[in-house]
Length: 235
Image (cartoon, rainbow, N blue to C red; front, side, top):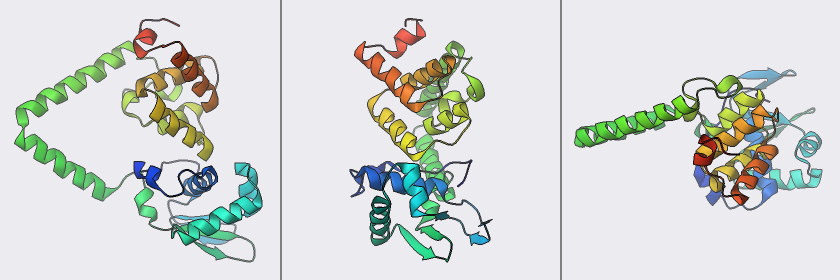
């Protein structure tokens, strides 16, 4: 398992035919998070990028599923051409097909984004400059109001850090696949800034738990508690 770093999950995951099957999503994300991002050796087995060693029993215990559930999910992932499997006398090695698409930094994506940005700036320079100035001012205002974020996130770019990365930095550990799914659901249900405030609130209480933060957000939602309320010191 890879203890550090990031993977890239596109929103088109929601269009995946197995997206509404929780077991499939849990197994798929767990394999993605465990896969090696560089060549390595595990107990004498050489692993290439995008490969992960696993056992059905161990994976079942980790995810709280039965071994039959794991077997079914693995077979479906193979049929969907998302993984290939090699079995040794000791381990099962899964290879993520198109592993590069899940890497956090993608040179092709960056190049395309830069080209689009350059075209937009060239075609509409005054408007773009005004927008950039406004965005920078808004970010600065947020930093001025909240320049004491808890723990590792007391850095200047706290507001630009992806939520999953922010949670991992604050918790000082890798987020599990189930926790990642819950964070993704939070992003769908709540304002990004409000989630960050809820994370801060949990950390001040010494609660390094995604579930605890979700309960905070649920309580705030019931009380119609907003980001403005938080910034004004209301609790």
